[in-house]
Image 1 (cartoon, helix red, strand yellow):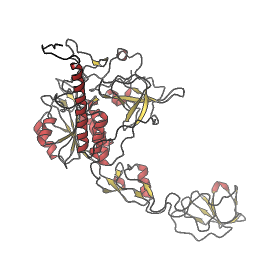
Image 2: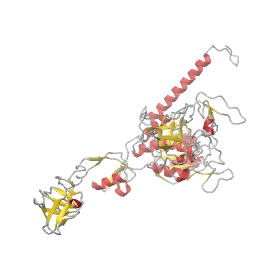
Image 3: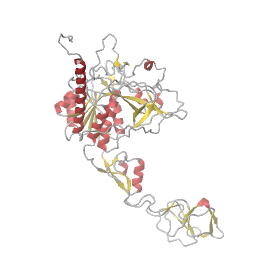
Image 4: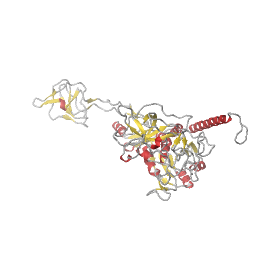
Length: 547
C-alpha cells in the first residue's frame, strides 16, 4: 500500500498507528494526573459519588411563566449548543480566547460531535483529542481528577487553629470538637409558667409567694404544697411536677390549688442534663459555625471558639482592555470578574482583598505574586498562549509548580492550579471569559479553599434533567440549571438555562446550580450531578433568561 508521500505502508498500519497514538495519549494523561496527585500528597483522589440521592428542591413557583428549554427553541431543534462566544464588543470581560482550540466555544454548532466551521473557512479535521498549546503537552486531566488534585492540595497539612470571640466566629470552621463544659441544663428548671407541686393534690399554697428565673435555690417543697413558678426558674427540691397555669384551678378563699387534668410525675420539668452531660461532644470538628452552633456554644458556657482561620485570597485582574466604569467603547469592555469574584470567594469562606487591576504587564504580575502574603492568589485571564498571556511565563520564571495545567471541561478549559513555592501561596488561574471563570472557581478554587479552611466538601447529588443537553465530544460541560418541582406526583428535576456560553453571565445569574454534563451530552430524563450555588435561587431579575 502506497501513502500519499509515495512511501510503502502495510495494510492496517494507519489504524494501528492511530490506536497506538491514542493509547500513548491516554497513558500520558494518566501519568500527568498521577504526578499532580503525588505532588499534593497521594496518588489518587476522591471521585464523584455515583449515588442517586435527591436533595429537596429549591424550586420556583410552578406558575412562573418563565419556561426552560422546550421544543420551541430553534437552536435545540437544529442540534446546536448555546455555548458560543460573543465578541469583546458585546460581552463583559470576554477578552481572551483559548488559543485556537477548535472546541473553544466560538464555533458552537455541535452536529454529530463536530464543531461547525465558521462562514468562509474550512474546518480542519478533528484531532483524536484536542490539546491546545504545545502539541507535545499531555492531554489535560478530567474534571473529576482536577477537582481531586485541588481538594488534596488544600488538605496538604494540618489546619492552623485560632481562638475567636463568639461575635467573630460565625462562618469559620471549628478546628476542634466542642465538648459540653457543664450539664445542660445545669439544674432542674420549669418548662412552663405555673405551679410547682409536691405529692398528691389538692395543694396548699401561700398567697403572693413565687419563684422567678435567675434566683438562687429555694427550700425543699413539703408534700401537699404548691408554689408559683416562672419558666426557667429553678425547681425546688422534692417537686413532683409543674402544673401549667391554664391547667390549674385556684381556690383563693380556701388557699388550695386543684389540677384540671391528671398530673404525671416530672411533667413540664427540664431535668438537669436533659440536653447533654458535662464532657459530652456537642458538635464535631469541621462544623461550620452557624448562628445555631454559636447559640449552642454560648449556652454551653463558651466565650471563644477554636476555629480554622479563613483562607486569605488576593484577586489580580489582568487585561488592558477592561473598564472599571461606564459603557464599553472603542474596543474597551467592562470588567465583570473584578466585582463578581470577591463576593463569590467570600461565600466560599475566604477573606478577600479588593481586586487589583494589573493590565497586561508581566512585570507587575510577577511583583504582585512575589509580594502577596495570601493563601491563594486568583488571576483572571492570561492563561492561554496568546502574545499578552503572561501567566504561564511568569510562573515558569518563578519556578512555580503546576499542579493542574488545563482541564477537560467546557467552558473554562485553560484554567490552571499552581503552587508558587513549597511554603508559598497557591495560584488559581481563571480564564477571562466570565462563565469560564465561574467554571474555574467551582472546579479548582472551591475544593482548594474547602481543604484549606477545613470545610466539608460539597455533598455530590444527582437530579433528573428535564431537557436534552448537548455535550462536548470529549470534555465535561458545566451548564447552568434551575430546580423545578415535579408535576402530578413526578420527581423534582432541573432544567437547563439557555445563556450558557463562556462569555455569558445571564444564565448563571438565574441559576440554582450547574449540571455536570458528561462528554457526549445527556437525554431528557437522565440523572446528572449538580453543583449548588451558595445563594437563593429565585430572584426578580431573572425574567427573560429562560427559553
